Amino acid sequence: MSSTLYDSYQHLITHIVPGPNSISYFIPLLLLPTALLILPSKFSRSQLSLLFLPPIHACFLHSCLFGGGLDVISANVVVWSTDLIALQDVRATYKRIHAVETPKKDPTSPLVPAAPLTQDNETSLRSSNALSTWEESYPTTFSARVSWVLTLLPSIRLSGWKIGDPAHDSTQPPAPLTRSGYIRHAALIATTSFFLLDTAAFLARHDPYFTDRSLSISSPYPSSLSIPASPTTLFLILPPGFLRPMIIATHIYALITLGGALTTTPLLLLPTPLSPHLYPMFFGPFSSVLDRGLRGLWGTWWHQTMRYSTSMPGRALAQCLSLRPGSKGDYALRTISAFGLSGWIHGGLVPPEPLGGVDAWKVRGAIGAFFWVQVLGFAVEVGVRDLARWMGWGKGGREGRWGKIGKRAGVLVWVLSWLCGTLPLLGWAGKELGYFGVYPLPFSLWKRAVEGKWSTWGA
Image (cartoon, rainbow, N blue to C red; front, side):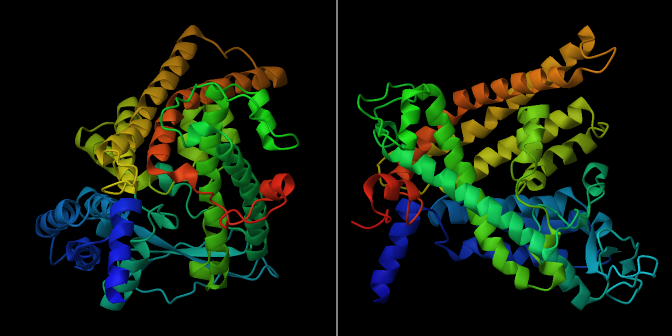
């Protein structure tokens, strides 16, 4: 029995999705919190870096070379470790924001913090939607440090933390929802995402492009592809070079949002400091895409899970070069760092030996290229913006309602055109890994409507 389980696990991490296959995979998970628990009076930041980063990086390399290859989690851990130990003076500048729910009955009554004030706490109280907060600097007592560090490590979006970056700190803490408001929001997201994912998966199942590796993104649809009263009628309306990238994008978006809504909602049972209703949802307003194009898409609308961890090396380099925060040089370094590392980390989704027999590094390269090329899109947008300012466009008065609508329409056309040109990289990778050959939902509304069957995984 144990041999069967072991063989199944080896098949999983070798051919399906990479995962831990060596003790060296887990050692950085112990070294990182150990490093941050040491008082600054014992070891400085440079001493911590010299003591802990070499073994963390060595374990990562060993895990990649001898334990089965690159994977997302270990790559994230090594980047996060480098950020928190070497690139940021966490123990000196980071402050944990504690949120305390207070009754709304008497808004003039004094606010009471959730914990006694000590020399370990720098406290500032404010009320927002019946929520008061107090800030906790790096504690001196060991028990308090354990709580502080173990809260920081999984807070990769740094929500509920002040880090010494004005752009980030001005948004903290995020405006909370009520628990009931979170449930309503999550229910809406889950319902919408299920429908979008079902529609995209149904279209992908009926389009041979998504399973035939010989077909390109612009290959014509086969004849008689459309099924009446189903989403496949889109094959008669939209060209393949547009519809197929949108199917790919919908798969990615709906999988993330549906998974996020389903997994976080049960966590509302946790006490206030841990409940997800105090943290921002994964995605921001779509209006940011219409107003700022790709910069709004990646900087505000899309989930910000790895935004700070991947941009910190660029921020640190900008500080070393004495670049003004918010300057073009600072922005460029952060952008290159964020997309550069994101492409490398997402390459960890590829198993060492994909079932289709394709070279794993080619697939990783395609996934990475999708992220790396976004830097060029940012450069185009910044260049056009600066040219417009130099030409004096938009000055001398309000643009008016129709002017704003026209501007947003133009930005949307630009973003969709850019995605149609870059998403085929992810489409090719997904085909090679066999992602589109598996229906991502156990039952389908569209299959029920067209074929009379609910199940998608059965015979």
